[in-house]
Length: 174
Image (tube, rainbow, N blue to C red; front, side):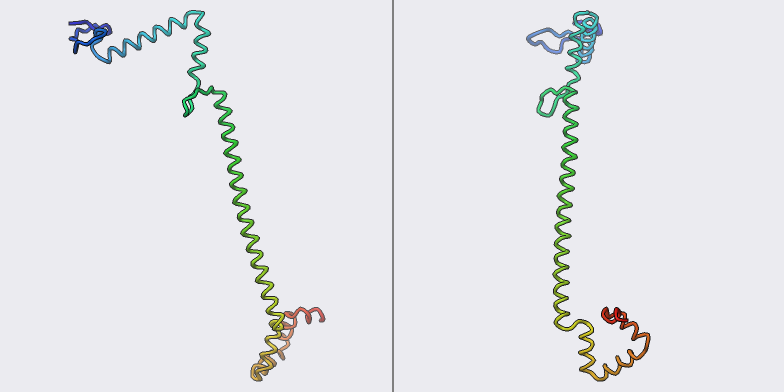
C-alpha cells in the first residue's frame, strides 16, 4: 500500500510499469498537486525583483494573439489590421454600389434610346398620313354620314372652341 502525496489516502498501485512509481491515488489528486505546485512557483517568482521585467515580457507574450496561420500578432498590429480590414470592406461596398449604379444608368440610357426611336418612328408615320386631323378629314371626306355627324357636332359653339383649342396653329391665331 502507498500513501497519496496530495490527500494522504492509502491506495494500491493500479499496475506496475516502467518509469516513475505512482505517487497519487487518482488523476484528480495528480492535477490538484500540479495546480498547487505551479501556483506556488509563480508567486515565488513574482516576489523576486529580477523577475519583474521577465514577468512583463511574459504578460506581453500572453496578450499576443495567434492568427489562423499560427503566427503571433501583437495587439497593436491586430488593431492596425482590423482598421485596414474595415477600410477595405468599406471600399468594396462603395465599389459594388458604383457598379450597380453604372448598370442602372446603362439600362436607363438604353430605355431612353428605345423611347426616342419609338417617338421618331411615330412622328414619321404621322407626317406621311397628315397626322390625326388629317386622318379625320380623310375619313369624313370618304363617308357622307360621318361627315354630316361631325358637321353637326362642330356647329355647337362649345365643341367648336374645344376643337380649336386642341389644334396648335388655330389656337395661336385667335
